[in-house]
Image (cartoon, rainbow, N blue to C red):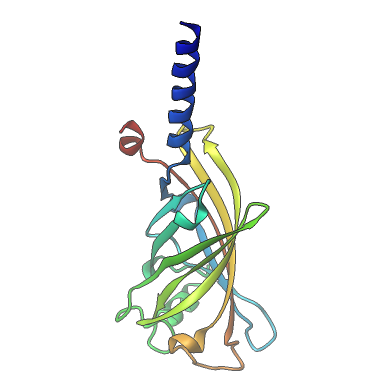
Length: 197
């Protein structure tokens, strides 16, 4: 009888472990996501703009990170430099041409664990109607129940570098730098309906 109890307990623990090992889908939170990009302005200053998140989904497999993925949409309507005239200029045809190309998108194609909570995320970035591969250097900040909502949650930071001329946005180069630095912070949670299933 005792052996049966141990077998049953082992079976339950095995089932729990297999559930935890499954990929978890998180909906990214626009109110706790910033996609910042900065550039050199004639060498005098380094302005920064935020591309606010529209929608984002992160699938994270803690046991097998290669099964993870991320996909985001960044509407240019949310672009914010804290300078109204600069916002308007960046949306014009010599830069983003937001009327013609209203969103920026990123869809991962590969996730590689580097150890120490660090990951390399390779994906396709589409800007200004042009799609190019971009690599994000990501760090897992935290994963677990959120103290406010109690929902299973996750948070990452990431950095990347790119050339805007690769995306057909070469206005004023080299005085306004071709090189763009990107810094991202984001968090997301499992949606209630998904958690209930």
